[in-house]
Image (cartoon, rainbow, N blue to C red):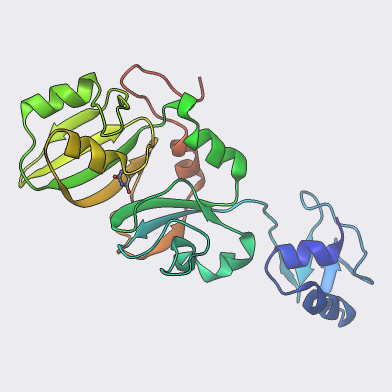
Length: 243
Ligand code: URA
């Protein structure tokens, strides 16, 4: 890889900016000052320093956002701000996108990445990745609803959902785990049993739980262990997408 591409890929500036840095003699590769923007580097092996400080190249970034209401799950939107506007500024050059969609009025765990393969695995209907939500309801859920969710709720368009877990919580709240991602699915599942969702928050994707110390609107990068947790989970049948 050319050194100018490597440096701009790190977010250190445009190609023009980094060419200037090279010309100024601020960049070294394995201890030797880089002479030209064409200088070749191996992102996995070369020791590239800028102003004497070692750089760390990486292709992918993984961000956990505690999504607030009022933000759309998209990279751009004409009307609303997007979840990508809340990503850490230093990752702005990494072309992050949200993995799946939360409604504009849904809060909670939103994953942003530029790793298309991981996003594909998490969203694939074949993988049955569990997504856990806390819903506040217009009326308390009951044991009949728990049975209906477990056997497969029929939505307004006739689609019969895959079995889902419903746990009744205090104060008209409920925890729901679904293994697919149809449009407005949780709201429509409750509508099918005669209840309206008045607030919705996603708290888990796969084995990764929302870090409750993140304030609403805050985002941070995932740790290596957390990235692994995304694809490391057990669902009710014991399936695991790594299996
Ligand atoms: N189900 C919904 O109804 N809305 C969401 O945002 C996510 C799941």
